Image 1 (cartoon, helix red, strand yellow):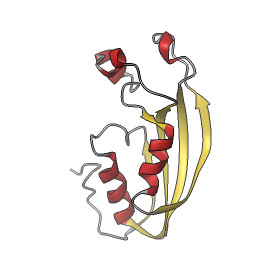
Image 2 (cartoon, helix red, strand yellow):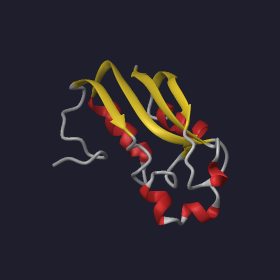
Image 3 (cartoon, rainbow, N blue to C red):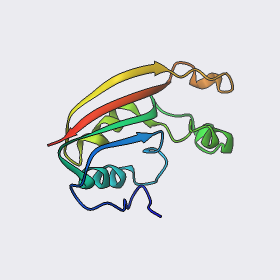
Length: 123
């Protein structure tokens, strides 16, 4: 069985990598993206979906089990998330969809969390 940080594919062997709300889960999300780039063929594409935050996550939510279980506590600041995708060498990074993710249980997060889909290419 593989792990998102250690994909069981040869280098430069896949056309597309699709992730669905998992880049924020591992401690080293940069490693996840480096691994995705490693397995992609030249001109390969990645499409990620994840939660991002505008601003800083309140300290009480960083430690909340419920916030972790709902993926709120793992949300990365949006500009940092985009930089994380750029750092391993992805290009043509673009947000193809963004929607505010309002959730009633966390009043302090109203309009701060967004669900995004981001596409990029391996150069």
